[in-house]
Length: 114
Length: 109
Image (tube, rainbow over the protein chains, first blue to last red):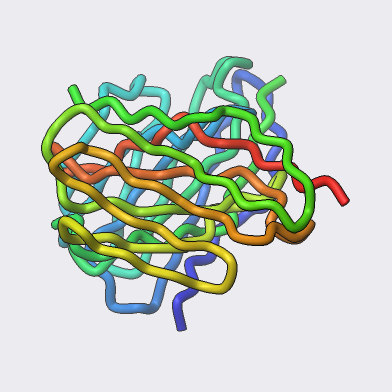
């Protein structure tokens, strides 16, 4: 099973709302990632978790708050977002972060901020 | 900072023709990936290239890696409509993947 699942598939939220994106994998992977992808652009890395610890934060604004409750789950908490944060948010996982193992991507959450 | 460039950015080709997408990167790496993305969908892994001279083939697609030239190619043979998608290369460096600009491929019947 090489599946990464994400919920919800679509999310529309106002600028004052608080919401969370969820990601789950059961492949025993110890690295999990959040990417943001704007239309017609490549994915951009936001956060990397390695063995449930945050190892990379690409200077993402604090209105995005990641959380890794256990090795299978990754959340992205959203608060006070801006319209320019509207994008496809992709979760990915890999065995470890060495680059020797491919990253498997989830289907994404399409976020619209109004 | 690792930079990854692809060309062409857009490619429109007829069914049955052959073509090559190029991926150039700026710093040393021997870990390169190719992904496919259909409109509104997620990324599908196509190839993992982990050494100089690596060549992998799947159906009408073949990928290669030249780490000395910092160049990977994705060759399409006898294109069919189903191959229409955006193709990204991604290079591992500085403990993370950096994606190329993407090549939007359209196959015309």
